[in-house]
Image (cartoon, rainbow, N blue to C red; front, side, top):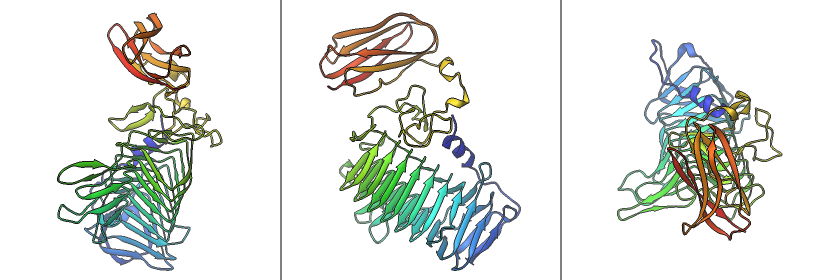
Amino acid sequence: MKSLFLICGAIILTLTSQSFATDVSGDVWGVWTADNSPYNVVGSIRVPPDSSLVIEAGVDVQFCLECSLTVEGNATITASGTLNDSINFCGGGGVRLYTWSTNSAFDYCNFFNVEGLLIGAVRALNSNVQFTNCHFHHNTVIAGITNFAYGGALSIYNSVVTLENCLIDFNWARPLNEEAPQVFVLGGGIYVGNSIFSLTRCLISNNAAGGYRGIGLGGGIYLENTYAVLSGNTVTKNRSYYEDIENDTIYCGSGIFSSFSIGSVNSSIIWGNMVSDFYTYHDSLEITYSDIGDTIPGEGNIYSDPMFVDSINNDFHLLFGSPCINTGDPDSPLDPDSTRADMGALFYDFSTDIDEPSRLPEQFVLNQNYPNPFNAQTTISYSLSEASNVTMDIFDITGRKVSTLFEGQQSAGRHSLIWNAGNVVSGIYLCRAELDRFSAVRRLVLLR
């Protein structure tokens, strides 16, 4: 396995103490180097018009409370880290981009622990900017006197913004406090309004929008009046909610909330978000070749457990046998292992071990059948860590056995069985695997 997971593992860094530091405030330009790092932002700073700021790999930028970096007019900022030496922006009021320059770009940058009013870690307004291999982590936006908060990690408006191979996780859009009036908090991870927006191979997870008297919409992503192209992304474990003194109501669009937007979504996994995965309102988004928890019609779309390696511990790579492997948009570029595009941000890499399917599994796993729901025929795959007696039965919802798919001894390894359900009616069925020391059950949905 590789790609985003390994990249993100490299850019989640701990700031180390250094003997030299540079205090900055007011107008800044030129080049910031690792030799003069960390740069302590002791007063808000600005890259003025007709100027440029270049930040080199290994630089740490530490903002004092409420201080921020603003780029405006035709000024530019280029922050270019590397896989092993990222650039860190920590604390304070974050980065504010108010420039149409096409030269502003961030590569291998880490934005974390930013807490701001109204807008989150990065604000792009009337801007043209690109983010690649960046990580937005543990940032918070708080609703201000306007009774709105926009985008815990990114707030984008009237801009052209591209994100590729980025990780946006554990960000929060929330109300100010319990005494504040009722507010709207939009986009726990990303807010995009009135923009052209491209999101490719990004992982959006564990973000939240909501709080006490805070109406949360779009825990992962909130889109409105936007032309959006979302390709090969994973959006999971996000939530949007509203709390008051009497009850806790979960609002729609915990993964993605989109209104009055156009564009496309393909080769993506939008699954496992609290209550609702994808909510659209007066949209014209074409959604294809994606695995979505809220059943949405479209060519190549499926509704099936994506089979993450370890969702509880936030490893969203795909297990062997996942229905998302080699089922992404066939017109998309091939994955780096030269196979058809997978659904999701973290492709299953066959090239790392040609014999991967033949390696012995570490534990017994009964995978979700694929496809599910299905019509007439479905495949049930499972893994044995050791040789065992196996019985694989199908029961209807009343507990009556309708079929035995296999009964006998099987060797350690990966196996699959096909159930041809041509002689039973539509409904919910249970597949039960009985082994010498284990048992497991999966629910199957037959639709004709």
